[in-house]
Length: 144
Image (tube, rainbow, N blue to C red; front, side):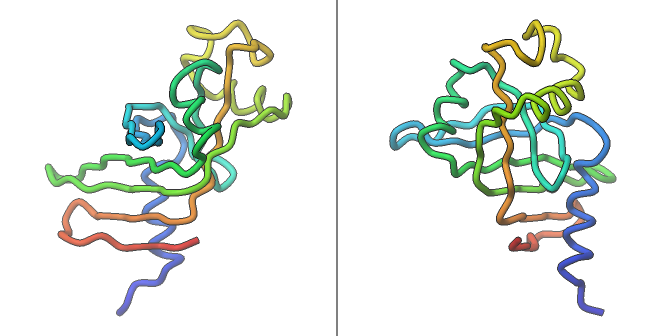
């Protein structure tokens, strides 16, 4: 039976649910790609991450909002990934900053509160998901 897009989307996003997870984020600085590890949350059909307002990734998102996130996954000693490409934005709404910021367990290590001017909240709304199951050798493309 052929797989459905809703089924693939649900399966791929299940790797992101209910916890802060580690991923890699790619941004653009001038004409150079930049990739770094980040901690993300999947909430409200978007990826959320925190950053410093003067941090490189925050500045790069301001100039070039197209980004990609890659979440490495593993099952039975086999590796795969969930890659999410989309538009990033810096969220300024105080209620959203407080609600989402409170879900990051390390938040207090870096910022004094969700109104700290050094705190940036970034939302990425994916337009494409590439999903490689650990036991397969080709990815599935899901366009949102």
